[in-house]
Length: 183
Image 1: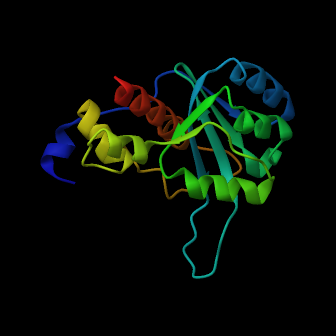
Image 2: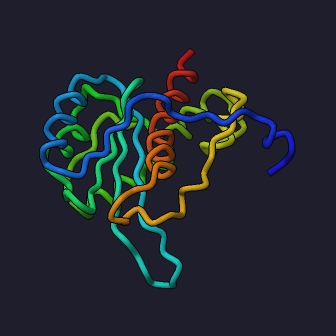
Image 3: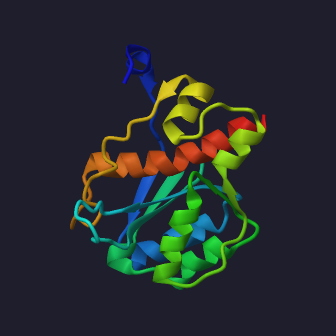
């Protein structure tokens, strides 16, 4: 990391974060998500450090402007209610490098993704030089995005505060980038 990047202020989600790891939390979160028109979207998977080792998606993140929802798929599975949000054409879902995320989710529960927007494609049409979440964040907001928690265990029995904040920020920043690129 260059000293210029290091001097940039860190950007992170400062809204409410709901970790959904029970069916009780699931219903509440789905009712709130159905009211949203634009969601940031991302997933996390336990990293693999051995050749041939592969894990399923552990966490699905969906973020509105003020609240992020972290679905612990490794604990609650991939419920049909979540699938319905991802198939809802009235809710725009934006993220970066979403093709692999969608492929991984379809391995858990078949669905037809609707109203998904790839930020890299929007960034390209707007003439941005950068293609990664970190570099687009720096270019648009002159702020730094931390990726420290990326290679942590997303299947841990309890997520750490840094994992929770990282996951919420990763989904939320996609939403913010999309909005900034629309202006």
